[in-house]
Length: 181
Image 1 (cartoon, rainbow, N blue to C red):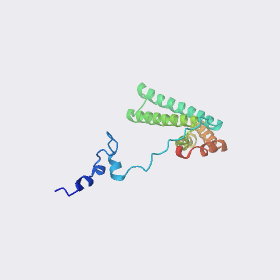
Image 2: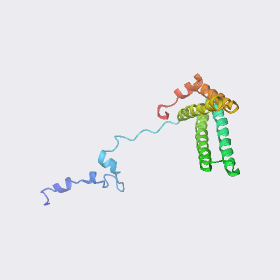
Image 3: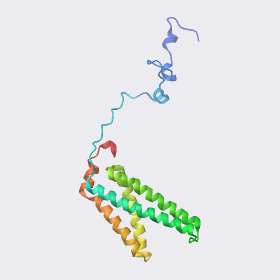
Image 4: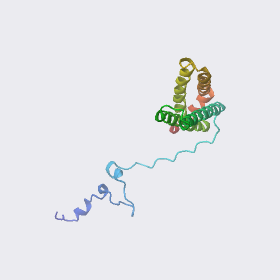
């Protein structure tokens, strides 16, 4: 392409589109910034969250979740011991159940730690797992004719749901920063 008079080729540079450095030496623009344009201004820093302790209701709920976590972990260990002792008729199924119970226990433990800290993300998983445990407790207590197993599960589930529905716990979740939800 012949150069136009007055150096017009230099003024028609595609430097900003190609991702070549612009303005600041040694800085390359990210590809997305070159195609979509950069931010108008940098986003403000997130304000520090106050280090206030979680309310008593949330701490009690976290303790109940911890108790449930320990119980589920014990069930997973018992299932593995039964497989190792040779009492399981279906080894693969029993190991699958043990892994499933261990995963539920781990998820409940992580969510319980979040409750202890007052994290709003933890409430949803805890409630979902409580509903799951309620179905299991109901099945043991009323359909499986084993109320010694099902009734304690149901009592813990009801206690947990009650503690999460107290005004103190609901207010703690409502007062958090909008960015934390």
